[in-house]
Image (cartoon, rainbow, N blue to C red; front, side, top):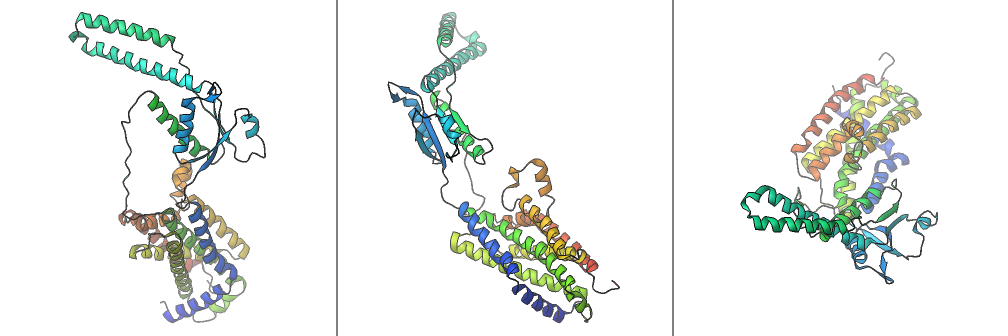
Length: 419
């Protein structure tokens, strides 16, 4: 039986002990808030621009060719680049390799860019016309009179002659950049989009497929809205696994548990008092982060009843995991190390801070084995997407884990010498 008075008394004692620990308060409240502010600012609504040095070597009579100027204007029009020009007489390769040259991103437009682009576009257009004539003759030749056929054949020969006389070297731009630079995929992808649009303009191709985005929710969400649920889940997990594990081990080392064992208190009351304390801590942490997110970033993702229910279950689950670890590991330093070894990889592999889609397939598989993955996915589904059905698996997984780990924590906690 659970003695409610005992649970509340223990809860008050544990809370007072926790509040006296500056480190505990810092990592439970201040550290999560600091990360929210830092990440919310970095990934906020401000426009991100990548510095890109551009050197235009395609000149005619001492002036930049029209096509090369249009290409640079297209880069500027994306809004993704802060384009800085390099003089034509600068050795771009040498400059990019200098230690003092901090932004090692140089785009070179070589000599002959315009001529090669125009020649290739003519060649492509001729190829399209030739192919059209060939398909016309193949499919409808039997309906065309002989005079028209002769004219078509004559036109095909003339086009073939022009195509043979036209230089077909592709126009080229050269990107000097380290492929291991974290921004390389983004910059390369934007450049590919610009060059593809430029190619379509040169050959007169019209846009056939268009992308239309439809929001999954009516909320006007900011970047902080999407990250908030992950931060809440991650730090409820760390408070449960790291905080509880080290606290219980410390109580074992300083003899607190032995003294409690001499009282009428039961192990169940002790476990439940810790669970209540961690649940309250999770609720306070959530309120604080939501309030600061609303105050500073004007977030719209306010937890509803089901989000609070999932937070409650998540706090119980991770607290009970910490109780199990604390009950097994006697040494405080070892307990802290094991807690860190479990919590931090879970925090960074579960996708709480960034999408798991950017990870290799085998890490995505690992992520979906972690309870934190289901916790933050469930919160995000409820708070951000207003999709309760999407959180069903999260409720199920965390509920099952809570049911398993609470009895296990009671079992492994050494209350008396005979246990």
